[in-house]
Image 1: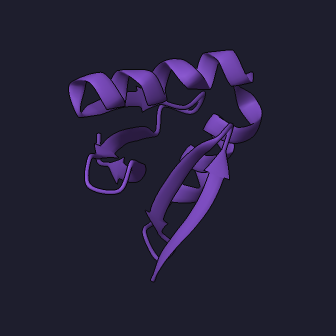
Image 2: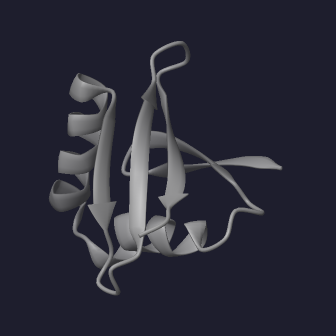
Length: 78
C-alpha cells in the first residue's frame, strides 16, 4: 500500500510493504539535519532522482514525481 509522509516540507510517498524502506525514511527524517536532507530532495527535483545510502550502507533512490510535486523513496539492492 502506498503511504505518504512529510519530511521537511517535502511530500514523500513509499510502499509500506517494501523491505527496509523505513530505514531510508528514518535516515532522511531523523539522522540528517533538515539542511542535509534538503540536498537530496533538491537534487532529485533537478535531476529526476537522487541516490543515497544510510549509515549501514543500505541503498536508496529518491525520485521526483513531476506530475504531483512529490517524491518516491525506493530501496535498492547493493
